[in-house]
Image 1 (tube, rainbow, N blue to C red):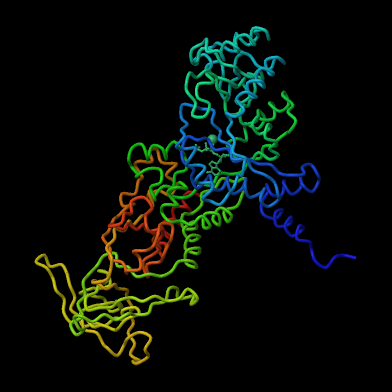
Image 2 (image 1 turned 45 degrees about the horizontal axis):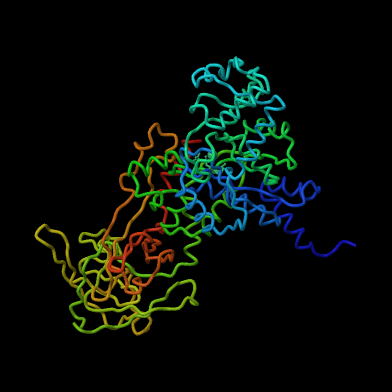
Length: 572
Ligand code: ATP
Ligand code: MG
């Protein structure tokens, strides 16, 4: 008899199976009994901060093991001491944790395995699969050949095992200068795959390492260290981005020669690229070093720390990469799609507040001087359970400059001379007089309010077409608000000859705003919607007791949509 319901495990497994090709492979490997448990790793090099592309790799590696009861290592791929820093190590840990992933006791470093890697290298020499080369850097390059021409064997390739062992030992003991010798795999200088033309395994760097200090002066190269670290940790599925596809034969070569107990399998997926953003650590580093942005966590940066400071919720990032999916095809994802993900997430969750970004003074001439009324305002129009708050209303108010037009077109339903508008949660007001300064700018509006029109009282049936937001000038708080926009004007700044040439000159505008009093209490990480304006949150870095700074997370609507669509089409 067939059971009526699928078991939870079956449903779970079919969900895994259906999502993407990597989950399909994992599903099959568990179903066939090839593996009892899935082991993955996220292996960042601590040479910069993590960015949106890494979010995808983190979610994939930690995701597949969370879904199947496996385990995931956070492994620092720290084999390049010249570029790596403790600052980056700390930032990476903070970011992975903030996304909600837990490596438990599985925090490792490629450098934890320097001893084992050294042994593996010695083993390769012993089986005549590695040799110490003394070619200069320049000769190494010419001997390597080109994509269309085979390389040439180094004259040192046939050194005896004994001589290689001795030289490698002396390399390790610091008897040679940087670049004087290197250990290379002995594979095939004529291979059409350049990665197999006797790749370097170890080079000499007389440099202190951020994790191992001065214990070593020889350092393993990425391919060797990475493959063997995977094997040492019992990684079953080594998930990496497509640029490593050509390295897979080398990955497998190491495993064939060294026959470790655990044999990991490398599987490649496409990188996540976001329109209008750069996701190369080298270029992000240049933005920071050259002072183009205010550090790695500048809210315009596509780094995890920048996005956190900007106010992007971790849940929205996870949702975004889930929707982007894991594929084999490199693609550029629209910034609009990313921002819509944010809007969906924030729209549900964020309380509504009132704020005026470019204030224009309004004086209600028929409102008593010392009177203050408390207006009841909904915290979320779609979610009554989020409650209400009281907004002070008084004779002098601030409204948004562009909610008033002196010479307004017929369809302008906000405030104009002799026109009427409703103040949200307040009264209907009429503009009686426009006051200008000597330069002719409008600096104040004299208005009158209709006492019969208070919101929620039902006393007047009178309706007007427009509703605008406001704050009471006697009660509001002052704040600086950073209005962030895209950092680049080109949909794919990675393709620009110089990314500096396609910077968006107006990616940051700072305005002096007036906020409703309750906003003095909001803490960083809490996002609210300023009604009619967008989503905002307090800045985590520069806020101080007497000065509030808010960041715009995202606008309510996508003003770039059309432009981006066109640009994406041109990209093909
Ligand atoms: P960059 O080229 O910017 O320096 P990287 O790939 O060298 O980035 P790593 O620190 O080596 O950065 O990356 C750690 C892991 O994250 C790797 O497995 C890598 O494949 C993955 N990864 C990096 N960038 C992306 C991306 N844009 N999309 C998906 N995964 C990525
Ligand atoms: Mg890398």
